[in-house]
Image (cartoon, rainbow, N blue to C red; front, side, top):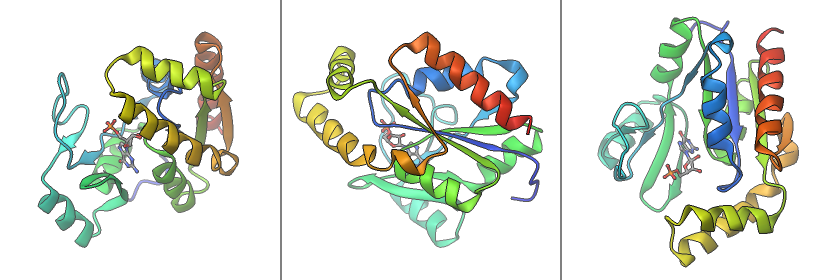
Length: 192
Ligand code: 5GP
């Protein structure tokens, strides 16, 4: 990772906070020159997902080899045997195109990136307006079992404690407002 002119824009949040929608909105703003950091993962590909677009889907062995060779900026075993991580080559790919990397990763990963690149990183914690609203959003997706929803809510409770370690907390009680606020935050940060 050589070119230090590129920035790292991290959006982290508990599931059900609306972060993915906000990240997609930002990616559509050409003037921001953002590109999505495609994580590597050892989990199975789901439904419509495309290898090399949503994730780089690799085997556990390949993932572990990358850990040993220190090819990751950060990595984590988010769920048992499901590893996720950001490859250094991915950030290089984006910076070499003169763009800034935007990340949709979990709270631990987000904090690690901020710690590694404190000056170059804008770390945004997206917060759902309330626990009730977050649960409602998770249920509205209708893709998860009750058990999975409970697991995600419990993970969220733990993650809320780290919100204060981020540069900004973006409360998402109105999606349109949150998108506009995110755009302003990112635009000001990359122009710095
Ligand atoms: P999913 O399996 O639903 O796509 O993702 C599960 C969790 O892993 C989400 O919270 C997602 O943000 C997180 N995640 C995705 N990519 C990475 C990564 O590169 N590093 C870390 N630490 N977490 C990631």
